[in-house]
Image (cartoon, rainbow, N blue to C red; front, side):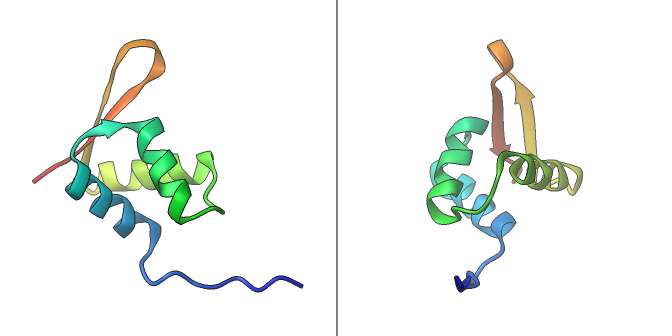
Length: 75
């Protein structure tokens, strides 16, 4: 039986901190950084977090070439 340890910060807070430190990045880069910290976050949950943050007005997502997206923090 495996034990799950709760992280100190929710995933959306960690995501915002990454954007604050690193600046704008692609969605795949951001997912890789988040996946290093939270191994159990899947792609579907990642995009749900991005959608919630965009609706809340915290981030802006713009489309780039060939399905890539640019994620930036709104100040």
